[in-house]
Image (cartoon, rainbow, N blue to C red; front, top):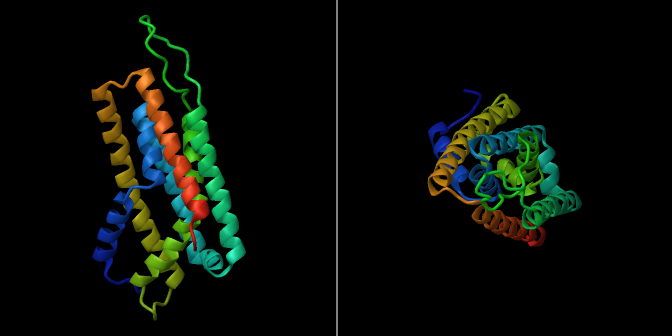
Length: 213
């Protein structure tokens, strides 16, 4: 079908790659732990939208430009790194919201709207040039050289990868929210968790900025 081969292997490989920890997973877990599963789901949908951009870009050959052009790759890499650093600093420096309970429990980190979280997930994913190069390197291995519609086959495989990714991301959001509810994270603990994840995002941004092609 469309020159696609070894589809079961592609699906299994895609699931394993989605499970591998990275900025996307960390963002989902952070939002789910501090704001509930709906926030984690919003981050997941933003990440899925970013993946769609990468798939279409790779199918249209834009990712090939990143692979071939040193300045284009460097530009996108620095923009992505700057955004990850920005998110990390935002989490580290975020002020607590005012306590709302009668017991004056320690305040939790300031909450973001679902639209803001969606945008955060989208930008975290779409500004990472390594994701674009991943699709360019990984997906063609499952398309026959003589496939009649290579771009369409690429989009189909990318859609399958993204659906599998969304299943995992939403599972991660639900399981993290459930675990945090059982642990009953207090405001102070949630604040320190937010700061720890902010530091992790800073490290992701610095790692991306300092990475080679």
